[in-house]
Length: 372
Ligand code: ADP
Image (cartoon, rainbow, N blue to C red):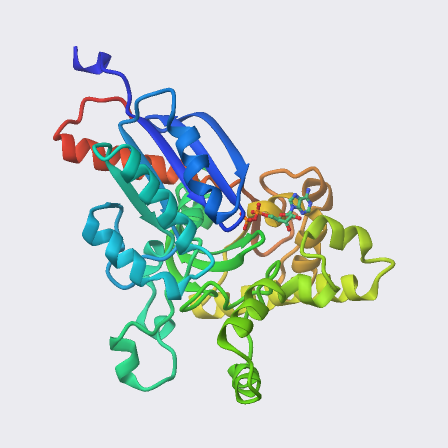
């Protein structure tokens, strides 16, 4: 019987600037996962070690930027790889490690399908007024616009919301993806209508080492005074954010631990939480209302202090936490009197990628009988 066929064996690779995260799946059931600390030049050997030992039906990749055209899960061909190479300037920290992993798999296993899933794809539904910058019209047509990122994470949350809250799933919900990289997404019925990251993942919230929103006049000032473009990029992506404000600490656990003794850490924490709260309000304005707030990713899922500081600042709109539920890390953390539902939900980007890959394999095999 066809149902006895084994599920697809899928390896998901998420290559970053200092780590290679991996997860293996049978269908969409997670089998194993882990993180390998490695620099970009070490990615080929790390990927090679992961590929050993078992045959794979597909290898799937998280790719941060799909540019203007790549908005659906895509089989990676030479042409697609060329298109991805062209997006490197749009996400110089993220694209090169992903491309290195993709190339390594192609070299070692040229016949295994490679599938790319894009963080930008989820935001294809942004309305034009949220996509555009107020710059001359012709640049929009050249692709200079807000793309938005963390889309696989937002897709994971949107897919979980219906089983958690009908109001948040069907209504206007702001998801706060707070990790080393951080952004917000305003969802309306699970669809992206507002997001804080822009043309690149530098924009928006204050992040671990990225500055977030910055007056472009500052960059013009530095360039006019002779700063090299590479220095500017390094400053804004690797030396700014929490790291820059605190004098070297980008890890939220250390910032919270040091905030009572070190005013720089206290300021960094305060600015981070304040910016998140202000952006939730901006997202709610763009959505025209607010039914739910979701916290996710490393800081969002784990830091009760950050959640508390953010929601305190939104007391004016009636948002209120249940302090005990917040500190116990419950799923539902709003108080009974809160005007807005508030949740702490674990994101699972790898599972989203595995699910897209199963769909892709089913379609391309022309079969619907293999287990998901
Ligand atoms: P990324 O995937 O963008 O590298 P993560 O989602 O893994 O980032 O989040 C990393 C952040 O989560 C770090 O700032 C780290 O300090 C924070 N974090 C992890 N665990 C905790 C915790 N228990 N309390 C507070 N912050 C935490």
